[in-house]
Length: 161
Ligand SMILES: [Zn+2]
Image (cartoon, rainbow, N blue to C red; front, side, top):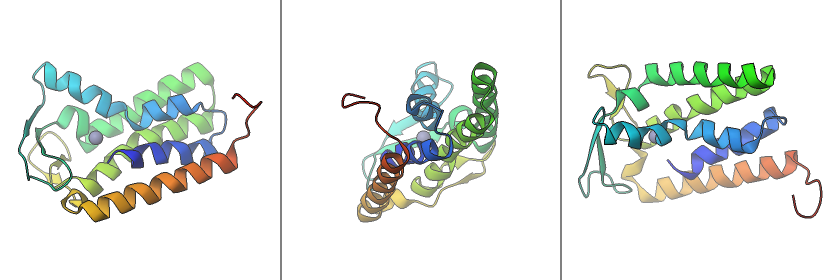
């Protein structure tokens, strides 16, 4: 999923208006920022196999450090704790934790069964990426809903910001 992650951040802004949108954007994409680094250092593996899904040719072979359920629980807790220690904003910390964790739920929806639970062989995925129509429809609806929620929630301070 791509736009759907950002939709969650836009919607989360409604629940925690004092949390910056930039923080929420980083939260929803935290593991996808970590994943290329883990690939480069060889801790995780992926290959390109055209046709493995309709939407992406990426075959996610081994990525428990960035994309397992256990890793997400840890990243959510750590990122929320850091956020709370800096801001002292409880609601924001809760939304930051949910924003980080939402990535796993949305990736389970979109990926084929390659999303690890832990560091073993148990993997799940509902495979929405096997349908281009479903992927485009879900991403578009989520993104539009996120934009609507964000614009209803926020007020610009002036004509520039
Ligand atoms: Zn991901």
